[in-house]
Amino acid sequence: MSQADPIAELESLESEGLAAFAAARDSGAVEAARIEFLGQKQGRLKSAQERLKSLEPSAKKAYGQRFNAAKRAIEEALEAAKSRVERPSIAADAIDVTLPGLMPKLGHRHPLTQTADELIDLFGRFGFQVARGPEVEDVRHNFEALNIPLSHPARDPVDNFYITDKTLLRSQTSTVQIRIMENQPPPVRVIAIGRVYRPDEPDETHFPMFHQIEGLMVDKGVTMADLKTVLRLFASSYLGTDVKIRFRPSFFPFTEPSVEVDMLWHGGDRWVEMGGAGMVDPNVFRAVGYDPDEVTGFAFGLGIERLCMRRHGIKDIRWLTQNDARFLGQF
Image (cartoon, rainbow, N blue to C red; front, side, top):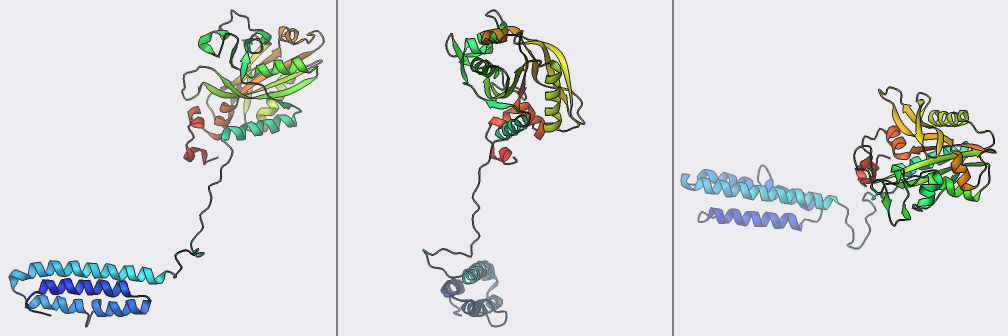
């Protein structure tokens, strides 16, 4: 190597090494370039390193730094060349069938939809047919026919989403009961399922839009015992035989007597309210043209979100509407 400019010699050595590895087209050429530049006995870098011993002390530091940089660059070129020649050669426009395929992301039903479908299937085995109704309702079906008078606080605009004086977003799926009974003589055995709307402040257990499943059974001789039997069968079939159910006296304008339905899961430390139920009020029968002296019936309403949350251990109702793929992917 020239004694005049050792740094320039290192720069030339680095350029030649990079060019040699870039030009290598197979493993044999890569190995030949490695021996030439990085060989432990007669490699050109080894010779350049020996050159350091003959330099003046003042020139050793600059030469050593440039030598290290050249060595790193050539070693990186070696690794890049190895990776390149080890990959199969394919045309630019060809399909490399050796590459792993990309699995498509398949969608699936929302946990609330899954829960609703399971409830429809379960109550179908109990003999209940599915009924649906409009989400935008008139005040007659949402209040008047359900024995909720004009003075009742449930009709307050603060507690409802009114669209006009006569229409609103339904606050309960009981409206479907009225529509069914208006158009079908007894016997009736249906479940109504769908969204309902109430201007609640969102928190862990409340949301202004949620889902209900409403059950209605009307025939001669229907009693409270029938209601309790259906709900107990539902609880044990859907939630497990270790789930306890209790009924607390309550009041609803459209049922008399009325009860609140609470459930206690195995290992739980508190009862959770799941909905309301009771025997259909005679005034509701009169509003749809049924004779309360001829038929009796029961009705119940359960919150689908609460059933879904309790079954899957979901802590916050808002998670069900945030569309977080990490959360939804668990179902």
